[in-house]
Length: 439
Ligand code: PXG
Ligand code: PLP
Image (cartoon, rainbow, N blue to C red; front, side):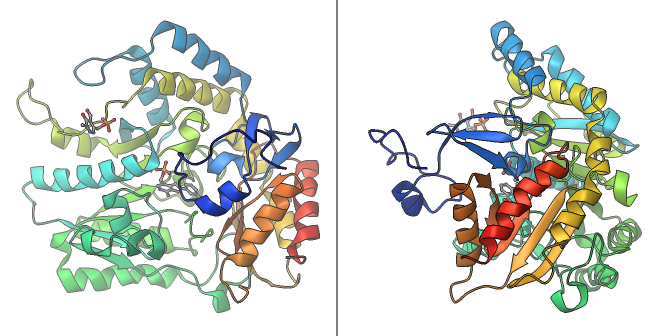
């Protein structure tokens, strides 16, 4: 699978989260996509086992989204986002809030998950300040958490390489809960691990240290994705919620991955029964079609901002492309698909085949753990002398053999399409099985 266009200059594009020099020496390029497949430059098909980057659960180039975006493009390309509106933005906000847990009924649009996270942190701080509790300025994240790459997000995030280069410039007043993973106690758990719920009590230690009255918000991914899929132990999220309630701390669920079907519901509360105060989402909001993120907040938070003079801007924050017409068109089409095609239910009903296929790797050489929840799954490999090399070798060899599997270091990650059937999973895992011990 060579770069067919030998004349193309790969130099100027600085690729995100990519080993640029190695990629450019041996590029992996796709030129189109449909349904479950990418098409490479040489015309060969590549089966996507990651639904884009967790984004595209309802399939690539879904015809209804293609049509909606094409129509919108010819009608309204852009409208000023500040002090001017267009109907689709209001409609999408309403549709998204309809899916949100009860009481969460206002929606602020961003263009990515990273922007959603930084927006959510600012809303939390602003909310407390407006209530006369400006001293509540400490933010609590979690080790191994991924909250995007903007300064707020890497400050509350817990992925060391993302923080290392900027360690002297992170936000002050941030602490981290311990992550919930323990190989010895949890290896090969299916779904939620039994061990680890007690770790939520670590939040009480931070309360004791700083006094709860100084804590603004706790932000966690309900199921941690990017770090290699860490499923919340039984009782953990509920315990976090209780501690936050006790001390007046806002709870933010970062659902950039988990929202819109990935775990078999619109939002994680559909599965875990725990309702946060603020939700961040992105990715599935448009099925990955046009960049868009959102912050959803409880009524009480929104209303707190609405107390001042009526003609005054309530929140000095926003993006040129907040609620972009093309993103809204894609989002509305995605919401229609999710509703009309019963996509979340379908995702839920395919969980078992996925789980069985994943866990069939138990006992395979070098496989040290398998984790899954909803349609999120990970196979963790023992590292070789060079950590990450084994995972990357599986990724590149899979691609050579027509399969896109993502690796985070030595953890193989799977984010299948919502309608994946036995056949789809056999194709994925037959290839992985063939390759996993040749690298
Ligand atoms: N929060 C969470 C929980 C995420 O998973 C972001 C914020 C940032 O979103 P943007 O749109 O700014 O990238 C994310 C994104 C991976 C992978 O392979 C994960 C993400 C992005 C790309 C790859 O796990 N998560
Ligand atoms: N930088 C400059 C010079 C700008 O004028 C703007 C927006 O007007 C931005 C950054 C922020 O861009 P965006 O609103 O797309 O986030």
